[in-house]
Amino acid sequence: MTNAGDRSRPGLMQGAVLGQRFQVDRWADDGGMGVAYLALDLESRKQVIVKVPQLPVTADLDFEARRRVMGRFAREGRYLSDLDHPNIPTVVGQGEYGSVPYLAMTYIRGLKLTRYRQNTAPRPIEFAAIGTSVAEALAACHAGGIIHRDLKPDNLLVGENGVVYVIDFGIAIPSNADATRYTRNFVGTDDYAAPEQFLGGEPVVESDLYSLGCVFYHLLAGRPPFIADGGKTLEKQHLEDLPAPLSQFVGGVDPDLAELSLALLAKNIEDRPGIEDVRAVLRPHLPAAGSPEPSPVSLPDVTIPYRTPDAVRPPEAPARSRATFVRPFRARRRRDFLTEADIAETIRRAMAEHDGATAVRMLTELRGQAIETFGTGNPKLEPIERALNLREPR
Image 1 (spheres, helix red, strand yellow):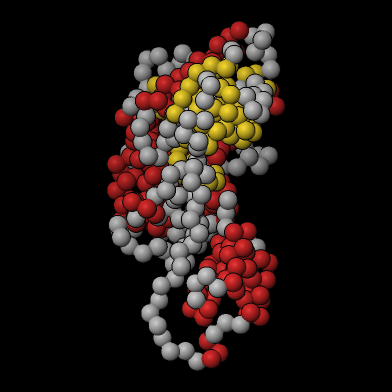
Image 2 (cartoon, one colour; image 1 turned 120 degrees about the vertical axis):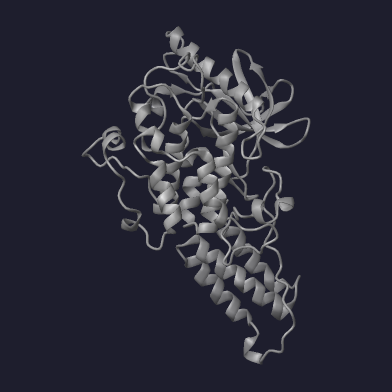
């Protein structure tokens, strides 16, 4: 793999307007093959992501290196333009700024799956929602003759709207005879790469399924199946070793989900389950349409697209504040009512809580109790809302 330090940013300046439409605001992120900037679409007045290729520092001297990068970037633009799927970002424009090609895509307000897992240990219902979303996106890619080749938690975004998106098609490749046109040696991310990727074989859709197994393992265990530890290289581990049992890292894993994750990590291509098998295993764990939100709810709530699909907000929209509690009236004794001292103490404990999901749960329950006691719109709810805004994932 190429180190990020071997690459240089094209350096889009703040305020630059691309194609008389996209006004650059600030740098957003570096990917394996591109640099992303947050920009304003002057036509729709929505925020978008503008991506430009990330060239090697030797690009001016190495025509072949420049050709490979530009070829991959052009191919990424074609793929994303052809793919129309709710779990894949949409291209809203593309062109050139000077000599630099760019892609403008929908901006997704949310966090990478890596960060999501740091904040939340998904239950089966959330695991199934995430897994199904990614599997559906992969199915669309494979049906369109596209192999992603770099599926990993950092290339999956959990939107504040609850939708999980597959991003960064910078090294995606067609599943045909021209697959190696812009490819040289190994590409991908060692932690999540299939054994055959290390051997230089032709890319196959089953390689994406192995990477999906690595993602599933990470979701369950909080770490990838293999880690470089100064002993065996990651390449050797993927080629020769079995992953450690999930019980070594976490207890109470649903056996069906554990079995699916490990089956996807089969060394032999033909032994891996297919996309339809993945869907079939996950389906019983998905929430039914119209079912209530999980209790406690983890934010972002990845079950929304399956529970209440009509309530899914646009990817660039901020999450709504938590819905007010609606509970039937009940007679209460005086000690059931909150005092301002109770509110202040609960907020203090929530702000000191290390686990973000636990803190959000404490504050959400506090808000419900405060609404019961004081009613909606009471100023006594304001410090609770401020605390929730600070502790909810961005």
